[in-house]
Length: 492
Image (tube, rainbow, N blue to C red; front, side):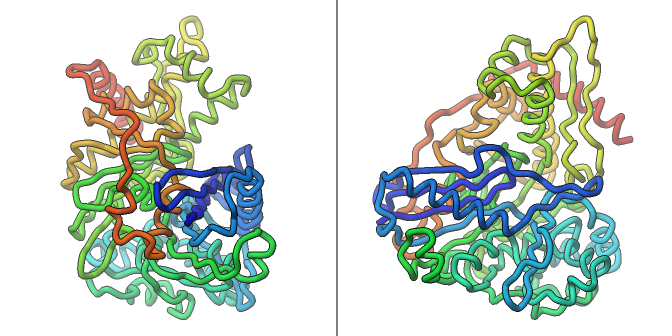
């Protein structure tokens, strides 16, 4: 039996087919090859078209089939991973009413801050485990206030992965995990948050039926099956946000286990069995993929908006003539510390770990007679690493003490400079695995379809491809303290 995984990212859609028996990837494809546009009609806004997502999903699947390394008729289930916190709104005909307001959009920061104070800071943290912040509920409130004609037409709201499942199956569902990432869920009372719905004036009828993450969320329709050369009736048995799904793909499911990613954004994601929260909501807690009210498994998430997007930006702004491997080679010619050049990687919207400040990216201490492009390449990667350390220290203050971090050998982790700097700045070993979001979504679909008796069976062949240990007394601790001193001056 084969399992199909779909990973709806900000930059592109990636799809994979894996062999359920071996958990090995049979084929993988990405569409488009270039990075998708983020629509920003005003500073701080970030939108994408859900209809474009669906078109890209279809083209990615057809591109995957074209490899002819498997029989599409052998695909038995579908899983979906997706960029978190986006708002998709459809009418009664399941037609999209506006572009999705995606995760890095900052327009609803003030909306969420007002809700935090009006509902009560302590009550929000105890029940929601977060400030309403700039999450999906606050984005919906922004639409209600600023686009009332659109709001009045909304039949259902959903997260990006719910939308792709709807297009595949014609069925709209959600989960506690999805609702928690949108800040619609009350963990204390195990129900939709009366406080959030009352304060914002939302009807609970906007929320689709709630199902477990690992369950049937609909079956592929005849029309879609014909268009995509799939069997009609294949179940969609798993939907999860990209970071919980990344944790699943790395077999991070139990308390104390920690995963990391460094794609467009950067994340450290640790699993806890406590209803934990940060008093300033700089890190966030959501229901993990295996959360139930009876067996709490929560994901404590640190997010840095500007990681891979910064690396891409310096590549583009310097002429876009180098591959990432060539960029890394030039950066490697520069000593740690980039001869004094510092970078703050905060140029992709409001940063939650900086209390929703929009600091913007900054390049410091550049000497025209001393520094060249390779210094910028290295300093950018080091600045991203130092932002990870800043965030991890917040997680440590809140009880998360990782002994090892697991990550996929992809994106920024393909850079030896980045990986070494991260390990030695965090002073935590990193294990790298050959997996990605689409592989995790496929595995998730197998768990949801009952192909595997339990997650342990799904990861029976799971081993790291590389382990990187910190070096005692490495210079990066000193370099980080210098960077931190400059950051605190800017924040003050």
